Length: 395
Image 1 (tube, rainbow, N blue to C red):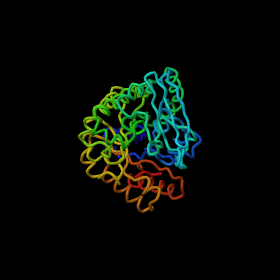
Image 2 (spheres, rainbow, N blue to C red; image 1 turned 90 degrees about the horizontal axis):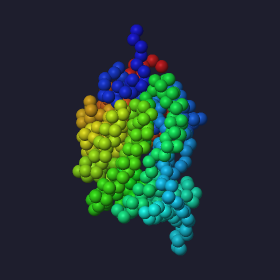
Image 3 (tube, rainbow, N blue to C red; image 1 turned 120 degrees about the vertical axis):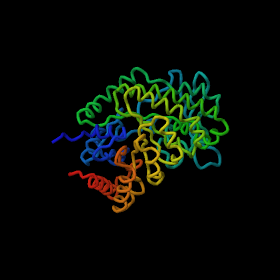
Image 4 (tube, rainbow, N blue to C red; image 1 turned 30 degrees about the vertical axis):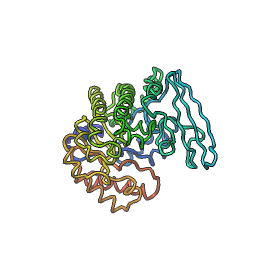
């Protein structure tokens, strides 16, 4: 009797759009289970116990973390040694909310952020550098125009030698675990236009894509160069797949024409860098992406992560990308898994398997299961059991 295929080989086959006996099931993000775990490898063990095709990511992410780049997983983010930071909290007259002011003093000038300290602010009197939480609360972002780019460059430091050494040391147990268990090893996260949301604002991005495209192109190029230096360090770890976050690189912010002009060239360079290192390239985008599918394939993306049935026409997505780009998703995480009925979960899994499988497909909730409730965890089990029944697995 032939040996069963390993989880890593199954995932790699799916990423290569090859046909196997059944598609894997691997949760792209599983926050609820992660929060239960004692550490990162315990989280992976818990995924494996559920029957999932778990992947291991480097650098490993602890269950609980709070730092200045919370929404950018991966290597540390540090500034040029000549950068100093000053923070203050002011109370404008007539305003119910305090305003936090953070100034980055650089050799090329100062960059200042102003952020409302709302009741749900979770950072005390501190303003992080890269975090989704600051976007809707900001009245001033640190990069407003082209004149700020020289100063901003001082915040985009390449990984320091000691940071690279620390990354390698921290990643050794995770890499050894992945090799021992024959699991897919991924790395990330990369970033592009999502970083513009943190340093320039999303509303201003929408306007500037049309009014100042040359400025946005320069800003994207600076971020891309910084990202690829960080990316190279992660690729050197021998990962199987590099993952780039791109939740804000959709048609809410870019028309297909401007996406092709501004996003495609940098994305293609990222994919090429991954491929030269022998790794696959994954791209996380979970909504407003249907008009971009052909361009995503053109960029050399190997796997589109986040195919949400609430946002994608599954059949059309498969017709457009089938055989060229692996599709990772198929089930809505929030509405279906966290809040839906068992029947809704079963139907959505069945639809996803039929529309997106069998080749070039990885089943997952999109984009996360955050809620650790009896209903959510019961629906997780229903999802897995439905997948197992459809693929003839005996567990």
